[in-house]
Image (tube, rainbow, N blue to C red; front, top):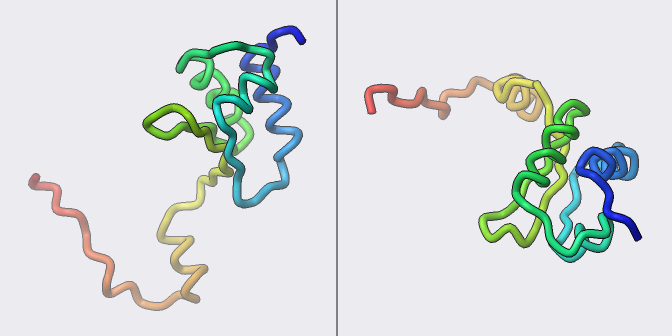
Length: 101
């Protein structure tokens, strides 16, 4: 198996998981096997993330860089999401963040 680029891997992920609404996780070993690489850098992960963000998907890792997550993203503001979830209830329990530090 030849090594594939971040763009090729991102395209494969996008096509394979485009309709997944909850996201998926992959291990470092999964990525090595799927890409034909023995190892990869954080730059490789960043390149995958960049390619996928253009299609409404994020590719991120945990702090140990052993598990990677492909998740859908949206431009919907958080207030709209809450309004939709709670059928436009008054959000009296949402307090503004203190900007003074």
